[in-house]
Length: 286
Picture 1 (cartoon, rainbow, N blue to C red):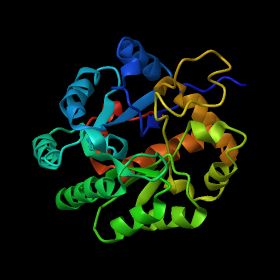
Picture 2: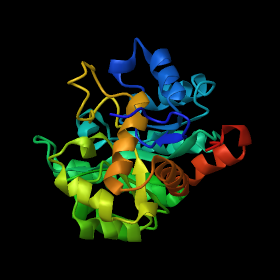
Picture 3: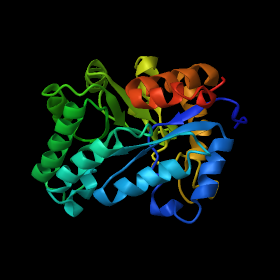
Picture 4: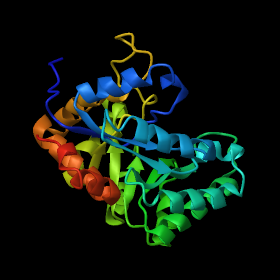
């Protein structure tokens, strides 16, 4: 494996830096990512108790990665912990965060028809309510899409949600095209580094380059080599090496890939783009 070019600027559009796995080492995790060229990280929240801490975390570590941003949302895997009234609290948190340049959208929200024991109707209640908020405030969304592509597409078509990212996308080519037509980018990360991930690799090769963004989903979805090298869990510092493999699969240089996915991420999340543009010293030099 050749050395990764750490002079390039990379953007991690999905990284749970507030996860318990990072609790004792977060300063090192953030510093390591910055040293590897990760200039921007999006933290998607998953439940009401995360919302205020995520805002504080983004502010606290903005001196290390100035492009560290967050979204507010209720993840479908956390609906059993959620109260109906959390939707009202979410609306209040959104209103209070609109003046915060590090707040960039709503997420992680969606539907998960893979994990057993999740009430589909309750999932749909929270998902639709959060999409309504995205429409009301004209905010992009970070989507969790697992065996639920068609249901999510149907819900999106009923609303005018401006844009967003379908995280860890693993649907069909036709479904991918439909998300793209609705203004969404598609997230690719460690899953594509596995030789058996034939469908994900086909999508990565065949979809328009302007539809692709990079992510780690840290501490989840570890790249193929991580266990072999003794790593405990995925982290944002691994993004440049993951992205190097993605660019190889795509058949383009790391330099071209880096610039494209950066531009794509900023296009999907305009508030993130504004944060970077308003602070020219934050912009990548590559």
